[in-house]
Image (cartoon, rainbow, N blue to C red; front, side, top):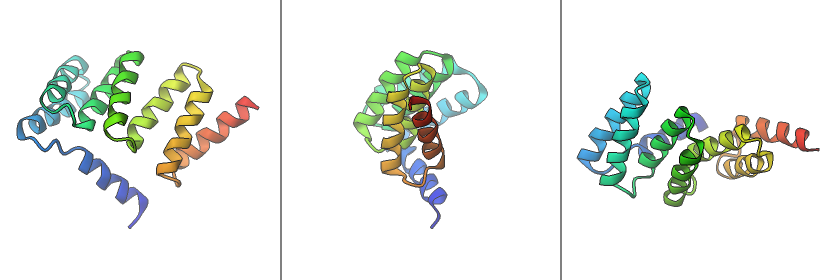
Length: 138
């Protein structure tokens, strides 16, 4: 099985809320996010979190929407909760690394890309970004 197939399967598993109501709201939140209705998506993902606070992907999706809105600190807070619930959440880690880059925190970004590579050693993006950061730091 190829790595991309395995990663897609992991995302599918992470996207299961294990609660019918939370799943319906989560799916609608994804639709709102895809349509660019960010405020509505935040409201829906917040409802998901309220219903199922241990559902890491609810936190991660809200973090994504907060990032898209430019609220980086709130996004980091939700990413940290995502990682508390699912420490190997490479998507949340990738979002965190992006925020660190935006904030010119190269050391934070490098450490985060290293964490991703511990989970997915074949991550070309993480390898390339880490190499670039190391070149910039030296």
